[in-house]
Amino acid sequence: DETDGSELSLEEIFSTLTRFLNEVHDAFAKFKNGAKEDVWAAYVEVADRVLVPLERRFAGRTIRPVRDDGSVFVSIAAYRDHMLANTLAELFGNAAAPERVYAGVVQQNCVARCRTGVQVVSKPGERVRTKVSDAPPDADGVLEFCATPLG
Image 1 (spheres, rainbow, N blue to C red):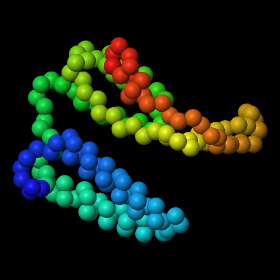
Image 2 (image 1 turned 45 degrees about the vertical axis):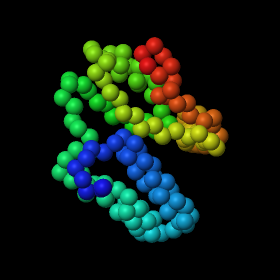
Image 3 (image 1 turned 180 degrees about the vertical axis):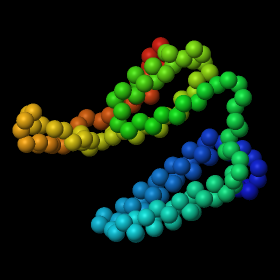
Image 4 (image 1 turned 90 degrees about the vertical axis):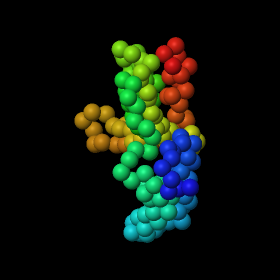
């Protein structure tokens, strides 16, 4: 029942957000050359249908219980970050009590048909020239970190 006072499971959070992202992706795929107003309306329609009911269900309170155990939660957003494993190693390696550190990582990587960002290829003093190149898939920084002794 979506109106009960029960705690939201991590599986329900994950499945709701995955559904939202998939439905937004599908909605946007219909707008190859669509007007920005149409794209925005499609986004709002999916958000209203998928996310708003969850927001209403937990209005005025937290979705998950707040911990009171001296732990620290660190939220990390990583967009194609080749240094993510190092960031996590620094986080846990420098923590006074790493067993009380919890990291939530949202990692957005390219996994197929990847391209670089804009690269400056001109020499200093020349007119600026840039290019975008093919690139290998991005490494999974969380998996890299977990394969280390700290992970």
